[in-house]
Image (cartoon, rainbow, N blue to C red):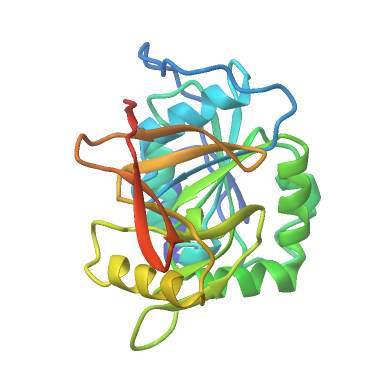
Length: 270
């Protein structure tokens, strides 16, 4: 048994060791749900956070599926299928009435018999990890997963994540995926405009985002502090949420030659 498989199996108990699709144990729900506006039936849904897609965000995603016990899949491509990230995912799901699983991207056909369509289109929600957005996009394109993820979105499967897991759904944004400095990355484009995660957590994020939007190098878009996020239906902002009082969301655009930030005050979720 490889070390990373041992770590995952030790932490989770009933896991198919060595399998690329990791299914976690079903667990009981904590009583506290999220008070929310009902999601539109058949809408295309994405829930993003600037950083920290924790139990509260997963709980909210679960309600957006409309299922009493939804199947939620973790896609850790950006983290190179980090074993510790997969373990954290199952731990964050543990208090919730969900069926968690994880799908690795570094796979072999000898170990994986189900297609990407079989896996990604059979769940109610998909959460993508943080990590290297540029590598994530390259792998998804090479594997054809980008096409399947769009099918999932169009079918109403709720998509989401934080950091690389939020940036990936927009047309473009700022990334630390390359050496030396933050740069622009092009992404899936399900959500129109640009995005900056970690807006309050990394000092270079805000000035660079302003500079790039001011110069026209980036389209206007949404910046999210860590622990703050946005729920989109069909590219429309339906709700702004946060798990921390100070966390904010901003719409950043160019108005009359000046870069402006419109604060979007979030509702607290837990």
